[in-house]
Image 1 (cartoon, one colour):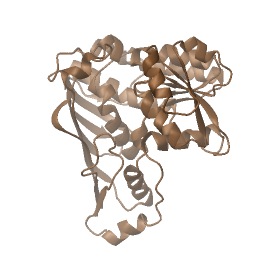
Image 2 (cartoon, rainbow, N blue to C red; image 1 turned 30 degrees about the vertical axis):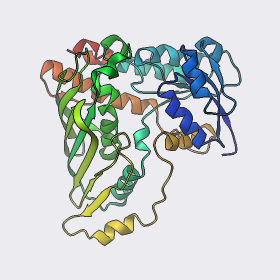
Image 3 (cartoon, rainbow, N blue to C red; image 1 turned 180 degrees about the vertical axis):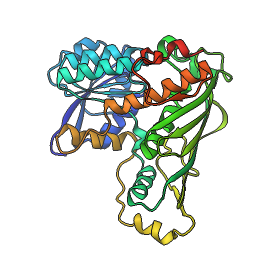
Image 4 (cartoon, rainbow, N blue to C red; image 1 turned 135 degrees about the vertical axis):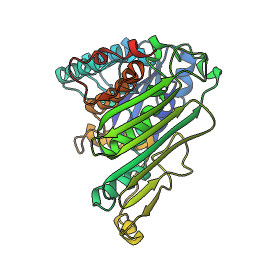
Length: 358
């Protein structure tokens, strides 16, 4: 990492985990400022990284000419305005999920980024796990055979105190519930691994807490590859897990015992099936090289892109695909219909899923 980029972290909640990941890549990044309306919280996060200043004004941060990257860790309803302001100020942008509140807004950001000549990188840090990387290597080597079925379980625990944060659990500020704040990661890993979804049938519900947003779901997905997938989601589990299991014609892959917030990592199991031998599976992984994981791995790849030595780790098209699937889930649940993907240009949910949240 020869070039060092100066970062402004906007929001000191999840932003604290981002700062930790920048420190893991300290040769390539300097956190110049942590911005939060709660100045004490900003100061506590800034104190963890050498030389970081604090700010309470986003406009003052954008006016600084020494900032290369604006890292947006704000409540979802603030993302669109914050992204557009950063692009107008000539900054590259990293933004937490969900990126914005509709597919039309994603396209709006695409146009703004193109006009500014800057990148907007969505945050799907779960892609940066050595377990999921091994599975993708096996798929690329051809030893897995065709995908048959997969099952996803996003079973987390959110008690009423979780919603004491004023913007959580409200349609107008969180923009959605478990589909956008929790299961979005498992669904992203699914499409990252097996490719696009062709059809969706889903039912979402609010059954755990007295909030406006959904906290449970049962989803059936048909992949473009022909595989079929079930996704079970709840925020009312006593024991948290994010379980992924993929059954291919020649191999079964799963992530047993992996921490719920790092499902792409850990000691995944890859078991040969049929005529495929375990030795063939092991041989395909023999030269696999581990990299940093989670936010640290994402930021390592982002540095390569900022330096011009690698591709952007994630793009606005990735955000579009992720939110298109969430849109289809919401629409299908509200209308009790099977939803085909990609959505047609005149589909009503492209303007926003808020009307279909129930």
